[in-house]
Length: 134
Figure 1 (cartoon, rainbow, N blue to C red):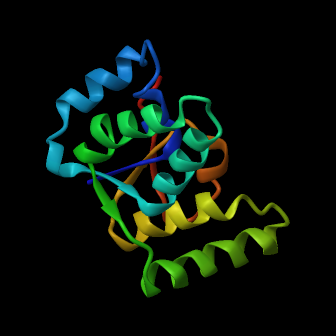
Figure 2 (figure 1 turned 180 degrees about the horizontal axis):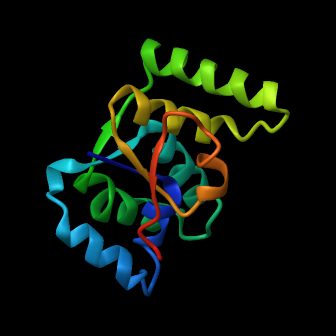
C-alpha cells in the first residue's frame, strides 16, 4: 500500500510529468494507491492561487483525486502525529504539521510514503519511505 505525498500528486499535473514516476505508477495496482485529506487541502490551496483556479481544480479532481483513495485523519492518526511531533520537538528539528499528519496516516495504515521530500520524512521513526522520482 502506497501513500502518495502532495509533491508526487503535483508532479502528475505538470506538462511533462517525471517518466520514472509514471512508470512506477503503471507497475502498481490502482487499489494500492492512496493519499490523505491533507494532500487534498494542499492541492486545493495551490490551485486557488492560480488565475485558472476553477479549471485547474477540475483537472486535479478528474485526473488525480478520482484515481486514488483518500484517507481521513482520525483519532489514531492524531495520536501517531502527536507522538511524531513530540519526538521532533525533543530533537529540536520540527517539520510542518502537514508532513507530520501524512506520516501519521502512513504509520496508522502500514503504508509506504511516496515523496520527493525525503529529507523531512526520513527523520520520522516508523515511516517507510520511497522516492519514485529518482
